[in-house]
Image (cartoon, rainbow, N blue to C red; front, side, top):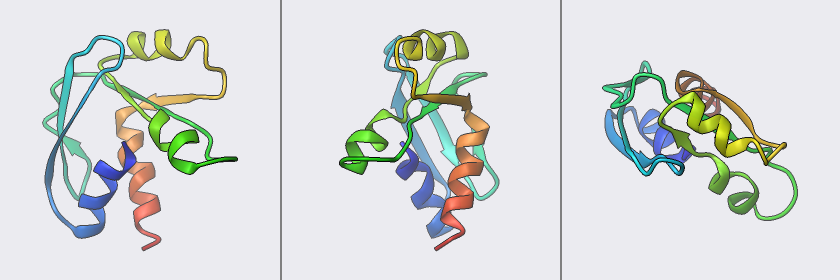
Length: 103
């Protein structure tokens, strides 16, 4: 998930993006801009973030970062997965921007 946010930031582009909430199956759309995520199709999406240690980075981290339609759906999804962290979607952009600024 971070890659669909990071590449537009690194390249200085605005990019429409979408994903599917893994709990509800709802499509979640947004536009990645230089200043944040805009045109969110859901008013309060949340995301999960997994620790990036041990094993294949795509398997242990990337494939576990997901966006949820709202906080209740995100909390239901991670209830049985204690190593996941969660945050509001705005923090996904900021964290990804911080990482992109290293390039």
